[in-house]
Length: 420
Ligand code: ATP
Ligand code: MG
Image 1 (cartoon, protein in one colour):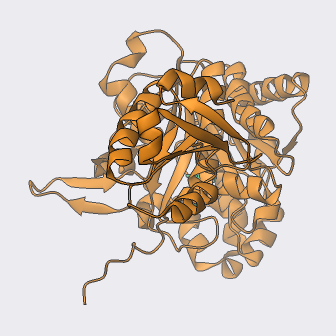
Image 2: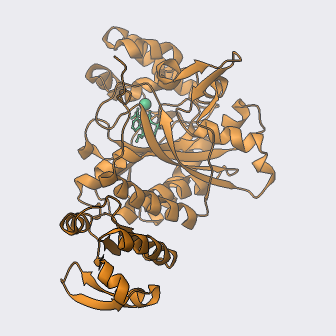
């Protein structure tokens, strides 16, 4: 038996939900533009090397979550699991650094990771992401955080908390990492299997392990704040100052380390604990070494990825999604062949003038047509029989009030009687 069902962990976004998605995406686009960010679109699949080098070999993504396949010419391709490496590649490949600086880009894209599907975690998911290249100042970090925050604010979300941390730079992080490794080494027997592996490759990740045992050991671990070099400390203090002055509430949380290897200095998360275990709605930070990692010159960057499913769930929980539905102004109900011919032309003319118009396409009875118009929320119905065509007049019925207005069968006359 062939299997025609959608693959495990994928989503259909059906008409009764897509209105909410469009509403959210619209606000996101407006906020991004308000901050001077332009949209970028990049390929759905890229060379596998891009993610192995760009995302970092010790991450969950590279180790187990990528959808990788060998193309017919033998090259290895991967469905994009995240956007930062894609944008970095595009910035480099297209020489965007030669244009206006800083480079400010955003995307609304789908990504693919082979994870265990659960609430808030699917194998194909959508992110709003923003990337800012060419500034190493804390005001760039602040701007990125303000952009994410402005989306939450515009949407009216209240149950969302900002957590920030600094994980240092290539100068001070090795000392911190060594201290962490020493701490976890001494409690090796209590660590979960995943973290035993992380002990060698990336001990920072143990800090955000969700297993209770590791969590307890992590609580007693050395804190990154005590290891920051002067530059990293000053950067972090400056960022906090900016956030304070903008009235942004945040908490410094030294367990925030983020999953990807490319971060340095600032890391942050916006968390909504009421949406369940997968509570991070937005995660981001600074990645000053990424472009160099991909073979370019030094080009500091900072950005975030915001998960749209988790964002929509947050909005649903707080009852913040507006009612959406079809926006039909006029439904034309033709009865008989002659009326149908006229209706098709009339509908097209009305749409040309910006009136959302539908008509019967199934040769149904008047009763069935009225039921359809009512169900789909059309604002007016225009019943067209042969007689109406002959006298060139018909009644425009307002579905809300039941009022019937006599109109001539010209586009202008109909338009003049539709209250918008
Ligand atoms: P997590 O700890 O939840 O696995 P992550 O560190 O892998 O997150 P990022 O790669 O930073 O997440 O992605 C940014 C955001 O994208 C996440 O905070 C989340 O909102 C969303 N996201 C990530 N993976 C998924 C997924 N599999 N399904 C739905 N949303 C996701
Ligand atoms: Mg993940």
